[in-house]
Length: 249
Image 1 (cartoon, one colour):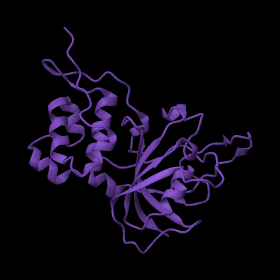
Image 2 (cartoon, rainbow, N blue to C red):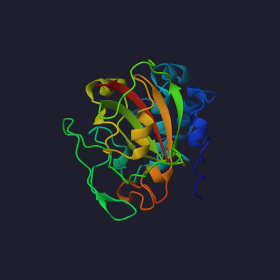
Image 3 (cartoon, helix red, strand yellow):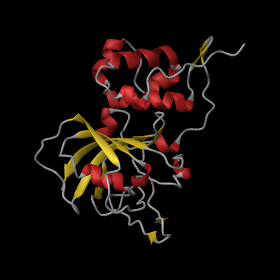
Image 4 (cartoon, rainbow, N blue to C red):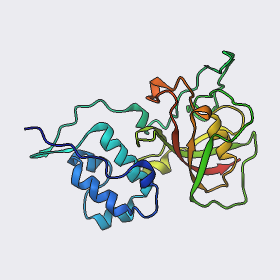
């Protein structure tokens, strides 16, 4: 008889709230994830001890990845993971979504220019929408210095995790451990120049150095009607990014 797979305990928006403690997320993962998954994400051991070393952003990524990879415990032990790894969540190479040529409503192509940061490539530049009401909302997760705000054309460096409304993570450059984070470099690009989706350009211009914010971006300022099939972003998708603005140059 087939075992019943766990269901999502919280939505993506609920996980971002401060009243969902890290310990509850850790306990859910320990109760439902297979042993190899717990080892990979450093979730083994006493819940209180794990909570001291894990940050909430890493736990949210692990929670989303558990349902993507389906590495759940079986009825008599861990279920062998037979799913293919999701390259959109792989962080070792620290490469955001590839830049490429795209088209706007009138079919005039906007060429995405590569930002040279080591061997990294920026998130794909998308259609530009003139004026009107902002197509994103921002909620502050962690306050910045409220002094160093980026200006158009300045270089910024960011850690980020992008997900769909159902919590599916399609891209992240946040390393899984603090040690890897020290050895890695955040995504760097010139803000306000159309090198990334407009929701990023506009949203990051409102952030100060050190700030972590949740950007909820409407399709018009993200990947629009066509979506991004190669990154598993469906058409007309509202995207949610948690972005940490590390530096403003």
